[in-house]
Figure (cartoon, rainbow, N blue to C red):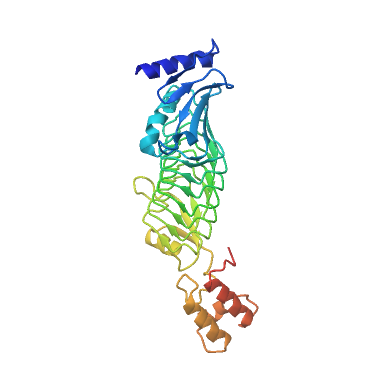
Length: 351
């Protein structure tokens, strides 16, 4: 351990024990303070040399690390110089809470990686981006609420948070990126926002306690291994809007074996139906896709053309005729045609 680190840790030990006042002074990138409240260390962590003082950090005797100011945190290559100080505090188990104050817009990659003593994180409603590995291996973190200002959560941002049991995701993200919750072994339930369109590779890989999951109808793609080794997940309902499901997206353990008694609930002729069939997984049908007159798993322009013919009295087969009576009132008329037009246009009538 270098002299600067030894000096800092000695000063913090005295401050945290309450034995005596800290000496004033500057140690590398941080300052030891004697005045303001319980703050004992701090320094810059802004995005560049020209504006690094716009975002700063401070650490107090309550074990709270605060990032404050205006703008972005420094990129990883620059931030490493500053974060080595607070990561040193975490290694001796004295950082318990991280606060990202209003004004800070980006949490940089690897910013708090391996801060294993951190139990809680507060993020103000100004942050728009959580970069890759930002909170990876914060193994004591139990719960986090990510504000709706966040529009991007990058890959493996919370991977290895083995005690994380509760997450509230923002309602503006469009993708859950690769490995975001990789090996979050205590995560038991999560609500995927209706803004999400894609669940990426290994997003929930190894979430072995995940037992409850709702996939919204906004999702169109679930990539390979997205839910692999989620061994407590025994059933998953896939909306008919999902048109692409990758290999071993769900229903498999880490060894490539099917999870016992796993079941897929979904619509006939859809990607979910095809995945279940191809992987020999039990499938519970919710019926046919609304508006899918030709039974190809989607409501499209071909279905609309069939609907128009049926409504005009043209002869159609019995399957099309049954599906064309959308409102099940015993007749095929303008009301049914309007419903199918809406479905083909992408309206969400049934989910």
